[in-house]
View 1 (cartoon, rainbow, N blue to C red):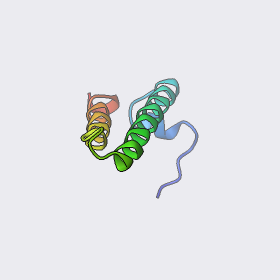
View 2 (view 1 turned 30 degrees about the horizontal axis):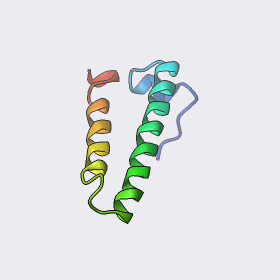
View 3 (view 1 turned 180 degrees about the vertical axis):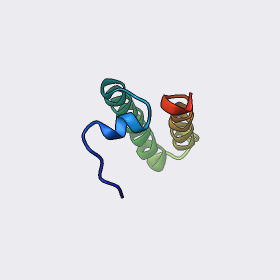
View 4 (view 1 turned 90 degrees about the vertical axis):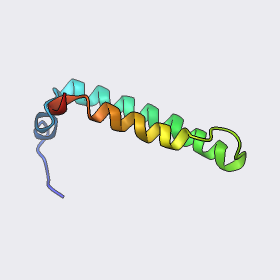
Length: 70
């Protein structure tokens, strides 16, 4: 794993520091909600049947539309 300087990683994905920060916070929110749904699904299998794959697909789609990839 490469060690990045403070601003080098956001630059390497064509985002400003604030864009990168906001995106990271947004992903944290998506993952938190997805984790809660996954726990509920584990306890009550007929609820949130596609929540994990929905969460993964949502993040995948966002990553493919931002920064250097847009």
